[in-house]
Image (cartoon, rainbow, N blue to C red; front, side, top):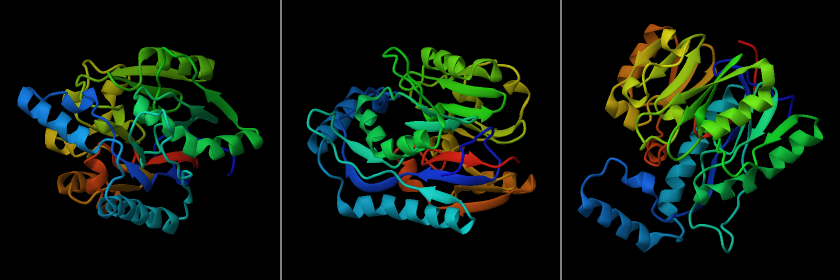
Length: 311
């Protein structure tokens, strides 16, 4: 690993942690799965389905679908000269909440400026994921990297909510992930070098900010405005955004990954978004990622950039 640095979301990607899908287990039901579902009958059916499989290994055919999506993405990254690291495969331990997935590497750790941040996940069933990333944290410490770990039991901060546009750092505030205490803690870590700006989500069924907004260039991004409370905090409201519709948002269309200032990986099914990006002279790299999107994440969720070069 080279010295870590991430000061924006679009500088040439040099080093990244990509999730992995070697060990998948079904979780217990979680309240976020019922957000927006009004029918008690549908809620009951969903709970019953979860309870039938909770704690069991995901069938091999389904695990392979997730692994194949990640491996295709890995090949794209490596082919473009990106150094790719993967989490160490773990298994659930006795006493831990049921369920396990290590595909979404973005949330437990992330780099802001030159600091490796070890966040704190609100969903207890996901907190075990950090065990697969301990080797990266240890290596960063040995290399002299500044590592900041959130230990306040009242604070939560997850990488999917953190969008860097130095010296501004936008932090999504929602019901089931990052909160204002976590954003305040990050401001304390960064001090006067950067300004942490909370961005409130309007839909409790959306887990992270990057599920409805991301940045793809200087003051340029992709957004589903109804998913955010308005007015947007300054200066975010002045950015040039590509607007997406509700269906594209639900399919995680905003959850793209910028590989360099002119190239973006996105889901192949989002043709309208691809056309809008092409009009702005981006190289569009379409990939299938529907199995991951079905679990609430896509390309940005699956990656934790450790190093981006200056754009």
